[in-house]
Amino acid sequence: MKKILLLSFLGISASAFAQTEALKLKVSAKADALEQKVISWRRDFHEHPELGNQEKRTAEIVAKHLQSLGMEVKTGVAKTGVVAILKGGKPGPVVALRADIDGLPVVERVNLPFTSKVKAQFNGQEVGVMHACGHDTHTAILMGVAELLASMKNDLKGTVKFIFQPAEEGPPFGEEGGAELMIKEGVMENPKVDAVFGLHINSQTEVGKITYRPGGTMAAVNDMKITVKGVQAHGAYPWSSVDPIVVSAQIINALQTIVSRNLNVTENAGVVTIGSIHGGVRSNIIPEQVEMMGTVRNLSKEDEQMFIERIKTIVTKTAEAAGATAEVKIPFSVHYPVTYNDPALTVRMLPTLQAVAGAENILLRPAVTGAEDFSFYQEKAPGLFIFLGGMPKGQDPLKAPSHHTPDFFIDESGFTLGVKALADLAIDYLNKGK
Image 1 (cartoon, rainbow, N blue to C red):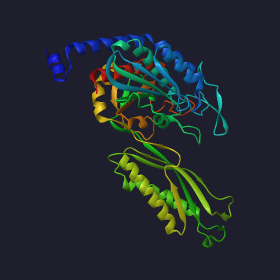
Image 2 (cartoon, one colour):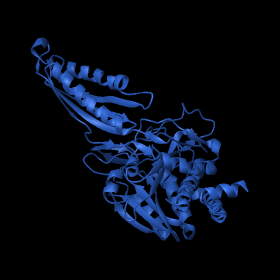
Image 3 (cartoon, one colour):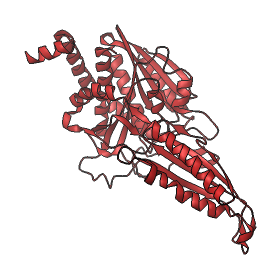
Image 4 (cartoon, rainbow, N blue to C red):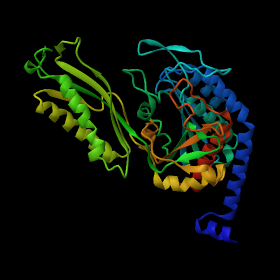
């Protein structure tokens, strides 16, 4: 009786609730049946990884699978992306589900039957290629979700758009790519997306668990280039120079005061890192110019803007105080917004995640200063990005190999939970309406 009253209060009829629950039982059974298929896809992609904007083989496999399911499929989106539309049997909103498909220039060190031996060209160099961030997992899981939902499309109240995105790790230098280019090419329109969901495997979260965070969950990223110009002189006579190396050192130290003195660290984290510095050709010449490259990370738009303004002021004024000049280009070549989980959508979908994994396995996570271009989709529609456990049970997270490393490893037993989670998020959103 209490459940009926609660459903009535929420505007959900008992029959509609029963239909949804029956549908989700079907999802669970079908996801279990698809487990080996998803694992097989993942192993194939893992053995044959492709770098950003080069994912032709991966895209072809994905497209053929989606076409076999009777979907409307578009290929060549943002160079190598694939987008498919599944129209449900009943009218309703539009949900987008996204997976990234690219690998990384990393030589694999894990001894597996399907270890990657692939080599490719990356920015003019021959490199090893590896799915060292789990995008092979994301692709296989979403292929499983597509097959599952297509088998029950007549029961869906709305439309599901499947987005298989290239170049999440960034396109080759000088090229466009990734989520930003997909959006430019209209992936969030025709039909217009009402909500977007995505997941990321995590090698340091135990299998069977899902983590999430409302609001800023992954950082905005801006890269920067700083050019400091001084006056060249003999190294024995520094008073004849305006030394850009000394000025650069002062700038590097001063930039760290943004985090320690300008950022409210009780609310959000932030990072300013100088990762590259070049100046001079020999020990006894003070050079005329120094170039530095760095990255900036923030967890809110307000902090991001504050950091940019402070960086520009510190760089130019520190140089001016020393008699030098300095120029800042920020962003220089890369900008991702904050990966921002819409708070209302997160609250709305949390019961779905708790039902599929068990409330004890849905954990609130701290924000991280890594970045994800899923954030571009969240600027166009409310979005929720979750993290799926991929670490073997009982392993110490501090000892588990991290992402983007040669020893990165994922336990395949967690894939079915990912299929169920994405499928149930789509079904529950569609059935509840906008």
